[in-house]
Length: 76
Figure (cartoon, one colour):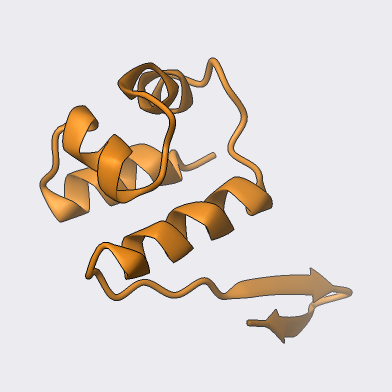
């Protein structure tokens, strides 16, 4: 499974410390735990991260696609 936290932080070119601040995390340790699969990344956490990135001046959106019997349902 993709590590969305690490992937997003790398794409933004931010340190764990800076990313923790702009993405709404409690600490650098939380970012590290998420990146090293010691903490689960749920949909609620991703939504919080997207909302915080928008407040911090980044343009972020969240789109969810659910596939059932080869038919996609777009949730956004």
